[in-house]
Each structure stands twice: as C-alpha cells, then as structure tokens.
Image (cartoon, rainbow, N blue to C red; front, side, top):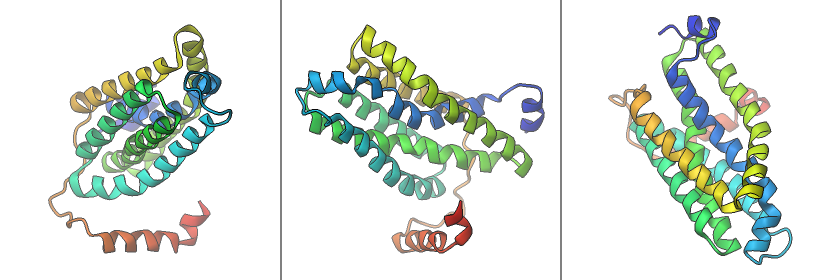
Length: 222
C-alpha cells in the first residue's frame, strides 16, 4: 500500500477511482436531471411543480439508505452490499426511464436513492479499511474533490442530454453508469473487510449503536 506516495506523485490508485465514481452517484443523480423538470412534467402530463416531488423522494431514499448499508457492509463485507446497491440503482434508473407516470417516477427515484446510497457509505468504509490515518486524509480529499466537481458538471451534462435527446436519456445514462460501476467493482475493487469475527445482524444492537452516535456531541457537532 503506497497511496500516500501515489497521490504525492499525482497518481490515483485504480481502486480509489472506483470509489470516486461510487461517491459521485449521489450528486450525479440529483443534479443531472434538474434541467429536465419542465420536460418531465410536460411529457408525463403532470401538474406544474410535481417533478420537485421526485427530488424530495430521492433525498428521503438517500437519507434512509445510508442507515442500512453501513451495518450490512460490516456484516457481509464491502462488495456484496455494493453489488446489491448498484443493481438496485441500475434497475431503478431503468424504471425511471421507462415510466409514464409522475407518481411511479417518484417511487423509482426513492428506490434509486436507496441503491445509490450504498456506494456513498461503503466507499468511505473501504478507505478506512485500506489506509492509514495519513493516507485516509489524502484519499478523502480526493473523494471530496469528486463530490465538488460532480454537482458542477452534472447539470451541464443533463442540460445537453435533455436538449439533444430526451429527459429519459438522462436515466439511461445513469443506468449505463451503474453497470460500468458494477463491472469496475467486480474487476478492480478487492474485498477489504474480513467478516470472520463479525456478529450476526441484530436490530437491537444496531439501534443501540445509532443511539450512542446521536448522543455524541462531537458527532452531532460535525
């Protein structure tokens, strides 16, 4: 492991690039389709402003999903939940592209967020697995850079797609991106977490862990 020297030399390890792509899924899914709101409402004969509900649904799914994938990644390893999350994101993206109803689009967006949140959570866990404290700081700075660039580039890409093709093509693009991430996880992201000594999932224990977090002033402060 020579992540520190790689980043010092301007190189980024392949596995960190994959984590960056997984981290970008949230911002891309949020910002890429914003220029298409009017086109979505017109295409689906939906009331003005109803497309905003699909965005609210995504935020709800993203918030709830992050609470689930962490315990699953601790119990089953990092890669199985990543496979499940990316598959869910891909199928939901395809559902978004094929739907003809604004309510169904909102439901698909919730499912899309539930799946996409896996990469955002587990990417940070993989960094912790593989890196020392100093290397983690460098790795997280790279991931934060990705999260900063994605909201800038996504509306530009989305605006071009919706004017050149159609709003549905945005979700087909996200579907293709999820498939590419699945392939990258399979070929370029080694498992980084041993589950040999992990206890079985227990709802009471998980709830207690979250309760201790929310009782921490430092955690709440950040």
